[in-house]
Length: 74
Image (cartoon, rainbow, N blue to C red; front, side, top):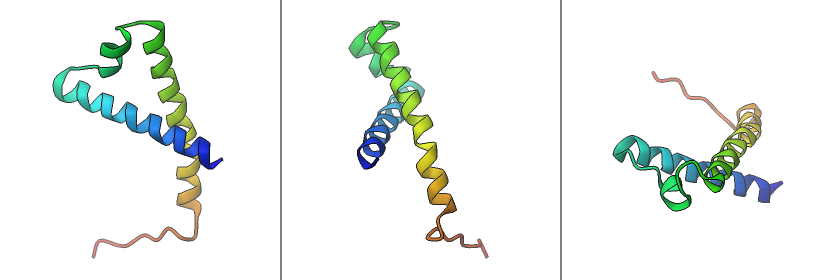
């Protein structure tokens, strides 16, 4: 499960960086590398989306963990 978590986290980071480039510079790196609307670009976008969905599970587990502590803003 650790390998899956690392792979999905890397894909989510790649997706986040790509969206940052889109937002800042209107530059889609995935489309630039693989071609706009190409099957390979679509595959990368799908894998990033699946990875993000799979990262919900570790997030929920971390939030439910007794190790997570919340500090008030006083």
